[in-house]
Length: 290
Image 1 (cartoon, rainbow, N blue to C red):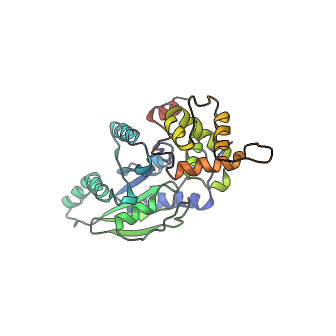
Image 2 (cartoon, rainbow, N blue to C red):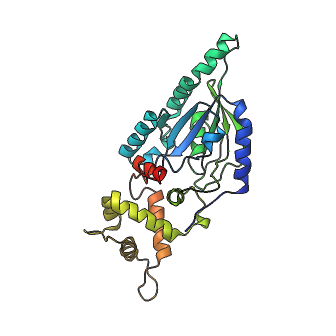
């Protein structure tokens, strides 16, 4: 299955982001802690033109804590300012502001030497659809200024928002990119809900998820679906077993794979399978080496 999604409003958003860069001091890039590499838009590296950037891993409450730490250490070794937050529990606003002040300090020092009066940091906040951008903004601003939702593509236009006296935020629509260079990236995005479900083959995505869990989180599968050792080595066979356990049967006793797939993906997204991360830094290196 080939997964692509690049609605018209996203092409427009890319142009607008490029045009608005000259108005901001820095960029706050949001990525999903469950897929820290796959949820980063590779187009941003060329679009942002060297602007100071803070990488914020959202939804850390849903991710494997040990793997989140490994990712943060990896990004920091690469010279990227990065942190993780749990915006739903109102955690992370203060660290974002503090890191932003650190990143923009050289800009304001230069302004001070020129006799320019200090002002609030102007930051553009960017991220792919359904990365939790609106939730993060609402925590920073302290009120519901941005629309939130569990479906991608909620924000369709840019808007400026005040974060106390310290910062002004330029919100932008979520932007995916025209072509995923590696289809595994598309699968990870689809599994976590970054791509509209109407465009997906649930069975393919669920099978992809099961294969990851079988290798990295087998206990989570056993606990959730009351499975016994050893787990089937074949992903389709595992799909069959879970479908039968969940009563996803058609006439004749055959497994209804579509219904079983919906259950598996819903369990993943609702944390019924626990705190998980679908990719590791080693996975990223493998993609880059190919």
